[in-house]
Image (cartoon, rainbow, N blue to C red; front, side):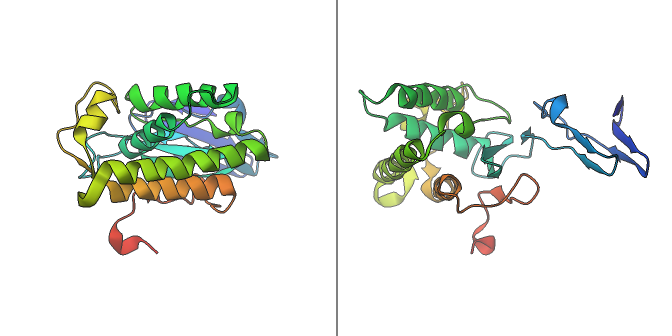
Length: 213
């Protein structure tokens, strides 16, 4: 693999492939994960990318949430709201690994990454028992957000700003709950093993109403 000013050039006995990088890209899969299988198959993937902001989310970037080889792309702002809700429902006397997850999710929710928000599910959910605990947290976090949104279906900007969700830039308006619910549903389906998309096949969430199943 050669790096040129205008992109990456991959060479194999049968082809030369030039890829122009997305700019700005915050982090790439480590070099050891760029595979050359007999010169015929060249795999190059990213975990995060910079995107134009959605109309309802004033944070640029998208991140891929991965678990056991599958996952989904989501707008950073919405994913950060979801991780903050997950962290908030962790009980005080939870097992150590759950407290570790809480600290990690809260950090990811509050730093204000532009791409590369990482729930770190493979490192945290190392057994089916842990998956079961995580699914209970998912249900509780979902209910927590529904209660926060209330009858008008909008998460208060005050709640988001008090917790500095997304970093130092304040939320100027309440947030529609429905796009966050798409993230929550995908997250639940992923850890249950029902979501089978990958970084190359997943749509970017939230999907417009016209594209939802």
